[in-house]
Length: 91
Image 1 (tube, rainbow, N blue to C red):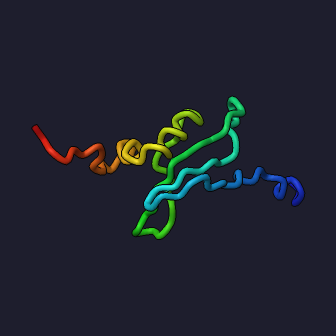
Image 2 (tube, rainbow, N blue to C red; image 1 turned 30 degrees about the horizontal axis):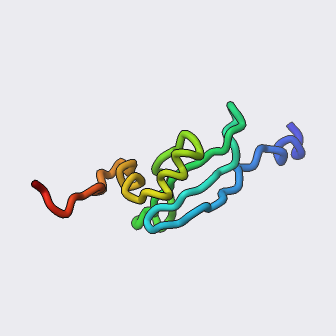
């Protein structure tokens, strides 16, 4: 194996931040190799590690739009069980 063949390894796709709403951010990380569609994700800031980590891989741009528009939906997707859609008055 030559040095040039080692250097031609594939680079990870560039992360494009679409919207940041602490502790979440909505990103696009290139395209999905299988179908060529954009790879949209929601990341959550990890206080312990001091960096963002993937929290949820979105299905499509419609789900991305909905998650950015409705912040409670983003919290509903959070696997840590963050309270969401909380009522002011319970009857």
